[in-house]
Amino acid sequence: MKAILEFNLPEDQRQYEIAYQAYDMFAAVAHFEDRLRSYQKYGHEFKTAQEAVEAIRALLHEELNIRRINIHDC
Image (cartoon, rainbow, N blue to C red; front, side, top):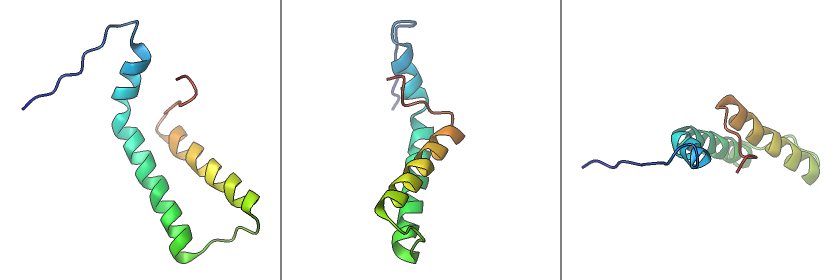
């Protein structure tokens, strides 16, 4: 079986980029989930909820930046 995605470029450029980066996004989400699981299972050193939110957001951005995924152009 084959599946072919077809895009009309340049009109569908952003949709093409999203589809092209789908595996990288999957990898980023999987690694992000692993880190969250690790915090839950082994503990963490966050002292406040705000500190945890900031650290988790930074981790998400790090995962996206490593893979050059830009979620802000959608």
